Length: 265
Image (cartoon, rainbow, N blue to C red; front, side, top):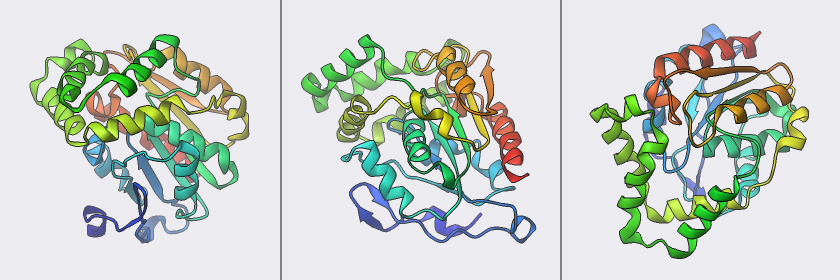
């Protein structure tokens, strides 16, 4: 782990921060690839607190800070691809999974591995699209706390919703990333493409994972992605909602570590 990761990255464009040089530990110098963690809607580095220390034992890990998505996903993907090394690993959660899929489909030959956590390759359902359009056209800043509060039961398994520390940690993270970021990310999700016809282009080792009780990206989404990705492993976690990295961090870490070793072979 390197201290530079804890400092703000210099901004080089709208909502994107410059990557500091990756440094790989000597023990894994020849095999390791840099790993980029892509957070979800209104998420930041706090999402990965339960995973990052365990991943840094095997790879050079960087986390993309929460970004204001005032560009399309293709534009964001191109900007990141221009700043990444020639080969890399991607771990995307939820909205970060959409960005990971866009990057993977645009540059499959550069991908050393792809982990998709609680996300989907297909478009929104009709009711989800209507909800995003309603937020974009009718929501106001003073509504933001109520919007976040209403999302929590959809984000967490009922058992984990009762865990006060987890619930408040998630709520605080969502709120601190702000209403404007929320709107910009909703717009980016509305405009995203359907990646399903392009999944067969991705030949790198893939991991697909979600919670059994995920209401946002249900298990069928993960199973469908895994069946379309060459040699992908799919894991459905019991007693887990949408926020798998925060609800079941040890289990998610174990699955991601196992995938990482597949990537290093």
